[in-house]
Length: 506
Image (cartoon, rainbow, N blue to C red; front, side):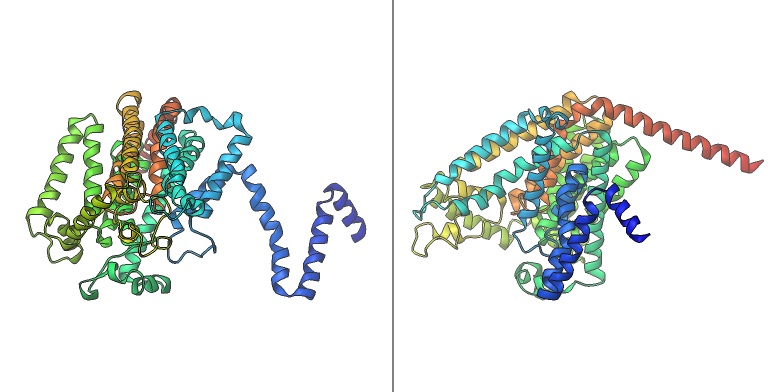
């Protein structure tokens, strides 16, 4: 009977059952002959096959995996893949783009034909030409060049294409905002956990080692917390820009459940910014919200926003309110012109100007302390801490490179702002677009003050977010229908609740 059942099952399911049976025999043989390691490799083969095949059937699952890994990859408690941190991101992005090309009719590549693509093509083309830059006279090093070019240029293009294709309708857009908000709240929770429940062994190792001089201040009495990010500057600026986006989403959303969640995420991110002790984060939050004053096209919003943030600046710059709190004192020092850290940066940048006057193309991408000899003319440029993403670009691509980068960034931002200001008619969708634009402004301010712009998870989130703005006009009709449906459901729930309340009184 068992034989008949097995044969029938095998016949009905083709060769799959036979293949699994042979795989099982192979696993047992490897366990007996070669030990547990070989056994484990054979056993994991079906999982590998599933991972390879699943994106073809569950493409959005691959997208959510990309977003999740991007957000968590530099968390000190996250398991290491044993490869450079950028590799998982890059592989998933390439897989998503390849899948879209395979099914090109459904991919809607036409949505990528916009000014952001034009600007990114210019920047990527320049970065490709930088492979020929041999200012330091150490020869062309393609591997080192690619490592930097991938960080400064190619990952921007990957993010743009992936977001433009896969954020394709209102439901996916809202789901994306919820997933982003959930991760932002988790980051806020984790910084609270670090403050009140302590660090994990991996976090303590970072704090006592590489991060000791930058994260343990005032004789160790002040800790700059970093949550699930690589360091406090990255965390403070990234979460400040996130707060900008979600506060604007909350203000402009018409759907009550969305408004409540976005407000919680925005306030949670704004609170989490302070334990980082990152002074630039204050400027990012205020700059992002100030940008919204212009994009809102509303005096009702502009006036209270200006008053609130003007008051915040006044309190930090001209009063001693909250001076008993170490984190507030740390933030307040951002307005101190005599601050030693800021002065040292100015001194370094003055020295850089003298070197870069003779190197208009920069010292070259991928050039650093590890490949520039000690007697080289540009050793100082290869070893000095850039302290800022813009300064890093300036050092490696020169005045020509930083000028092209700034022009391309301005084109991308202004194109997105024009869409929000002119093309979008739905007030709530305009609010979503404004949130992404203002968060982009905030992270750019962060890039001016710290080297965080191209770091995880910021690059994918904020350049991807700006890409979404260019998609919004294509989904506006669907959005209006979706919003009306959600508002009708809310009204129906209110009606049923009211009827139930009336019935309970009878």
